[in-house]
Structures are given as structure tokens and as C-alpha cells.
Image (cartoon, rainbow, N blue to C red; front, side):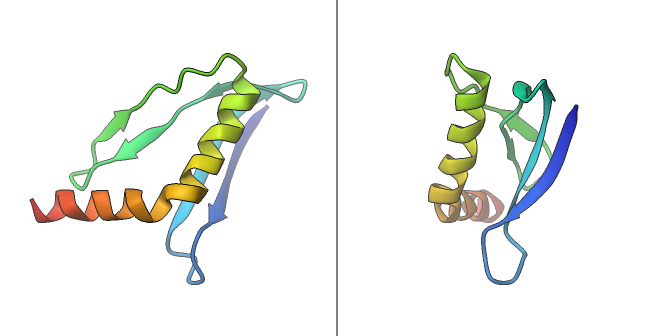
Length: 80
């Protein structure tokens, strides 16, 4: 089953996480973590975690915890 939804990170619903993946019988089967570049390109990053369910949970929590850092890194690439 395909899953696709957003988790909003700020009070203005501007900064958000897009969750997109596939589940089979409630278990995560495929997820991707893409880093968006200002020019529209995507950089894929591998997270080495054995369980796909744990990888999914880790990825969402990582972005919730560090989204301001990721936003500033993105903005710095725009300026350079």
C-alpha cells in the first residue's frame, strides 16, 4: 500500500516533511530520504538501519529534530 502525507514543522505550514513510502501488511517496504537542492536536483542519502520500520521512524524523527539545520544548509547553498 502506498503512503503519502505531510507533517508540518512550523506554525505557518510552510516547512514540512513529505512522507512517501510503501507498506505491506503494516510493515514499511521502501522509503527514500532525498535532500533537495536549490536548483531542483535531489541528493539521495543512505541511512544504514536494518529494519525498514526503524529506518522510517528514525528518518522522521531526524527531520523533526534537525529541520532548522537542514533549512539553513539549504539556504546557504542558495547564497553560494
